[in-house]
Length: 292
Image 1 (cartoon, rainbow, N blue to C red):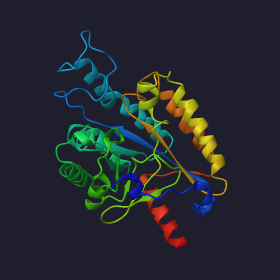
Image 2 (image 1 turned 60 degrees about the vertical axis):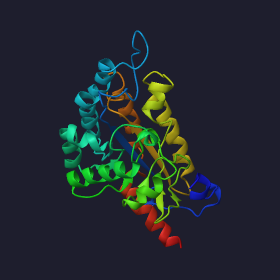
Image 3 (image 1 turned 30 degrees about the vertical axis):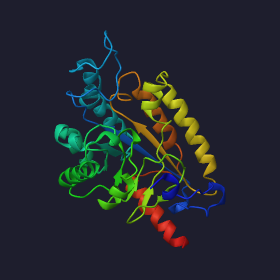
């Protein structure tokens, strides 16, 4: 299906208000992306251009740049999230479950939600068998956590024309690739509908630091500005905001404090909830059912 066949246009101004329990007015969820980069392939992203150009293999400098995040950066983020008592969502490649066991165990111990993020860190349009890729990701997360994942985030938000149908087939209840709203929306599939939760391309450290090349403090500035506007928007109807980080980007020494300050700004508001994707989904489905 094409996008216009999956989702109807719906202006937010004309919708029935969404209400959160206890009088809270908005939800923030923070997603930590943990990936495995295959040393035998060109790196998904680069920080250092090879002297002669091209895509050399092995690409040790760029592989090591990313690996630092999983060896060191993640653990800084974990300490920060623990200190603020925030349960994050771990968007993880299926192959990373085996390679980065200590990360996965730390997330599981803290009852973080595990979200499927492709089996490997590759464009979903370049995967040889998308159905098998989703199946393998689902099974490895189920095996490790004891339950199948509810949510999916495509590597780089990539999808094929068939991705939502395949996700529904494998039991996924929500996806975060369709960054087009500040409230959950429903996508049609060939079987059961799937909910798209608000994600972000712009309060995302990949966009800011690696594509737009901003200084580290841009993460704080943009996160605070976005939060303040959404908080204002949520006066009559709840909004959802995502804060997205990668350990090899915001987990490095010169950037972490800006992620901390962004989270602390949110924590100052007693009527804002930090939820996982599953919690947002359950609330939205209950709210939608109550309005029928």
